[in-house]
Image (cartoon, rainbow, N blue to C red; front, side, top):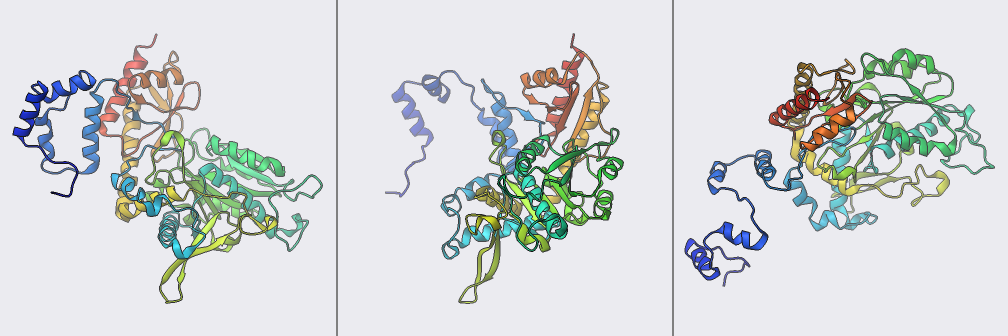
Length: 485
């Protein structure tokens, strides 16, 4: 007896089964089971016999699925912080292995070498992509990472400017009771208007208790970049942190070189925090570390993770090496064991679960390790060359879509600045609001973007959008806007 559960059937076996069941074909069989459904013509599958790459295979069967009744599939052009990237099947296969899927927090390194190794590789690859000295083993999401980065910058600013601190020479706490002196209350945080509004909402929740003040730095109305003159105007004593998103929420690529000179040139020097929601952009533009960013806090969901209706996501947190003691979360390091073999362990875990609360840098008591391991698997498969190619593909597809929509004459640019894979447009027909346009496109199976104003939309494109998808977007957009009454 062969040691497997399912036996292949020959043509004669199938005919005999049909005879027993009193049916003539496979279609009749399925019709009796679940009703009338269309089946794929076997002749259409002959084109697969020569071999085909996974993305093309997925796209082929995706088109087949679209032809089936009750289809609920969309071409996704909505971003705003979570992007529709292709996830190779091998990632689901590997991450489902019990070695990755079932382990809890690896407190005992001797029995958690696999997980610790994967997290170490995640840190190493992310540090290289971001150009940062050190990256931790992940945070919850980009919004929480940014909030923790700002708290960290406040502590660093107090340490660097001891006149502001009531406890000189001591670790600065994150939380203060009503009868304690709060050293953060006079601090000012400058946040670019180009930072994701959802991130800003979380930041406000985090800093509300410590009474630090937030001021918004306006964008240049023409380019969409952070307004340098407004930044200079608002830089003053007590500004501990300046936050810039790259690319910003509206998809515009910021001039970090120019901004960094102004921020770090001010005395007393604020800390330069760069946020980011699309790390693929650093395959074609200089990463934050190249521009002397003190801290990076962003989102890593694009690397091997699904959109999943907005979560779980993957927070990325990086910093300069001299600030490592103030970093939240956990850092995995490489060392040698008693037999002089490579070994991995936590080298820093500055949270209240590990050390006394007053010295803890964060109250966050977990992270998104599973998503981080997914990212590590994805990046290891991607390779340096593949990463750059995917970044360029995202860039090109977004610009193709942008050009096609402008050529219709129905849209105009909201901002003129350079963009990566996301851009903003204004609908010229006053009879069609952004909401009406988005809803009309959704009825046709296209998630057209995100509303940013009454007549403004934010549109993104990734490698998951084919040129056919782009053509379909443009044609349906023309139909909806031109026929509006």
